[in-house]
Image (cartoon, rainbow over all chains, first blue to last red; front, top):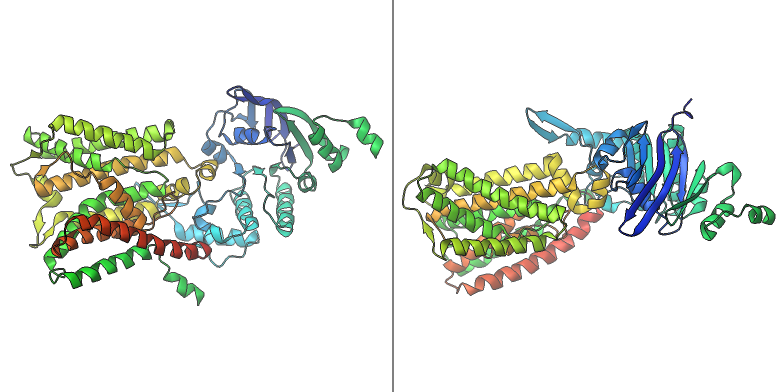
Length: 258
Length: 320
């Protein structure tokens, strides 16, 4: 039943910057609980696509619908409120701010005194501490600065946000960059957990082996074109790397060599 | 145990040390330094500089500069004087001056966020343009007001002999800005907009809106400070506040604000203004040539920054 209604439908999205065509008609769907690996070399258009879904860029043509609603002209804030959470490279955190303020950034809890709204710091600290412990970050205090955390712990804060605010789609941009082996394992495990919660995941990366462990399908871009969509059952990690490297599918060659 | 130690790592400790050094030096140099009239004098100057520095600190934390505050400050005094001389009701004149300040803030904000010109350049431009227009409009002459007005007494009248009302106002503004920065969503967004605008935007913070609001606040508080000064002298010069753009940045930075945005405190900026004002009054009392003022500020600024830097290293590694 869930398979019928796609969470996110991207149809023929095009985007140019001046003379450069960053996206030349990209289309794919993502269903609840599905993990999509978005792959491609530098300049393939991965970031432009992610930013178009986030609302930072607006496509020149084509459509992006989320749960049946057209979102390609909405602002990042409106899109986030619908339940799409983006985690930019390096984690979605502001270094100088403390853990609690980072966790609730953009979704601050407030107390109202008539027309005056004041941050409810006590409540935010309580909730942030609880969730962050749940996702496995050990911190001395929710007032600790994010600058003191490791790359993996910063990612964990972003993941904790998705679970807490019940977002239904998460966009991860190079999430394993700068992570240790252990932290990478932990992140991939969190992605599996999100999948079980029915959360859709778009995982942008250079590292095919990382994404191969958790993805259901792979969307491969090259210079703004879509090379194809490959389901995990039908393709080995090596085959996918081959496609990214050569820029084309070589089914016969791949078959012959195995 | 370690936590206790960190409590003392108040990020603005540099400015407090600088303040104590200034006080210590001048209490040796002049036996008139520790008097009520000196305190009143320092607070009066702090009020005018600090009112602007508080807003500048907020703007800097959101990642932008405003060099045009001195020009706005002078314009406010001149404009208020002109309106009062034309017999305009004092409170309508007050609102008109604030509205002019808001308009300049809006121009600074829109040029910076929508056309994406760095605010250092935007406000350098408006600083010079406004100053030039002001000199043209006044032909370089000061504007004085000889009448009496309740507004001027309310803004900056005398009380308790040595003190002026503006000292109370600046404490009220200190509370307002500290509240705004630390306890409201706008404050949270201000930190985020300056600390990492890309992440802030991805998380739904309306970065441009936050910056424009802070430009509006800065220009309107520069206008307010200009009116405090006018209320004190009943006169304004078109060359007033020429150093204010850099002095307010010095106060904010001395108080712990990052030049690149994302970090700073309001209390620190207030102390920064207090240090600069104490220096100015202290040097006069010590009978030193006024040239010393700039040299001292330069030295204090650098010393304060060295302390801040060391403290920040520790703060970023730990809590708070």
